Structures are given as structure tokens and as C-alpha cells.
Amino acid sequence: MFSKIIKFFDTLRRFWNETYSEVVKKAVWPKPREWVQYTAVVCVAVVVLTFVIFLFDFSLMNLIQFLTTLVSA
Image (cartoon, rainbow, N blue to C red; front, side):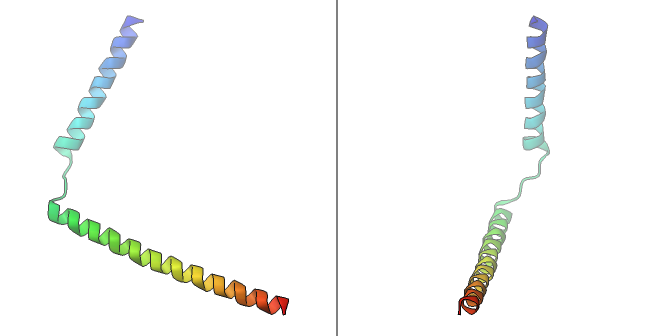
């Protein structure tokens, strides 16, 4: 039983060391200017997608209202 606990903590320690090594030493992090560019791209994409979804929603709403007035008239 004690050996299972030691094995668990050994596995946990190894996982932590590999994760730390992967994130801190092996990963290539973007420079601050790249962060700004990526953020700008995301913001523009959100605005464009919001506009597209708004157009689809508005168009479908008007189409449904038009069709319901045709049916009820």
C-alpha cells in the first residue's frame, strides 16, 4: 500500500516536471507585438461574425413575418 502511494506521487512529480518543461522551456511564446496582432484579428473576426449572424437573424425574422402575414391574410 505504501509503495502505491509513493508510486502515485512519483508519477505526479514526473507529470509536473514534464508539463513545466513543455510550457516554459520548449514552447515558443509570441512576442508582445504578435499578441497585439492576434488580438486585433480575433476582435475583427468577432465583429464580422456578429454582423453576419445579425444579418441572417434579421433576414429570417422578416421572411417569417412576411410569410405569416401571407398565410393569415
